Length: 240
Image 1 (cartoon, rainbow, N blue to C red):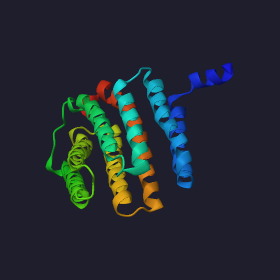
Image 2: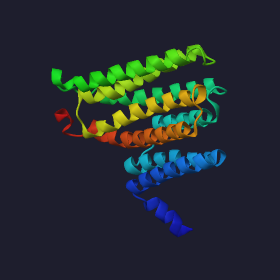
Image 3: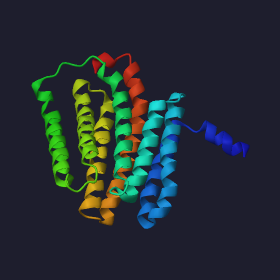
């Protein structure tokens, strides 16, 4: 027992991150075979990602904990029945997105670099795609969802969040910004596929796509929460 505890205590952040990714893969595979048993696997990668954060920075983070808990709670109900638990899914989604937006505040305070016309093409394409996708999703399912106010409010939050994820890299070119594209895109895909599965095409492959998007999103958020501390404290950040 002492040896096991010692190994857990001495585990490196990278090893813990790999354990979290492995838990994600197990969750996707096992829940695709036995949906109910997948619920027993799901908490592990949330807990592991928080352990990864703590081990990497040697400190706790209440905002990250709130994000993980609200996301976990919402995604349990999302994977169970979006329509039946619609209000819970949307409220927990709003809490999780708010926690993420809060973490972006220090990044937005970093002095922005000079923006040229050549630099705005890709972000503009990303913005147009996000706006079109969210608006199309809202128009397609507006008459189907049980709570239209929460649906519109959640759609606006989703749009704001994805736009922030796509526009921050325009302000600075820190290498860790690549995770923002994956975070914004992962959440967008997760949201789209969950509604498609519930209200249009209840196909197993779409449900698997939702689970993959969930795992990619959470993995990238965990890594970015660690990386953003370097962005904030990097002595050369003005170069970005």
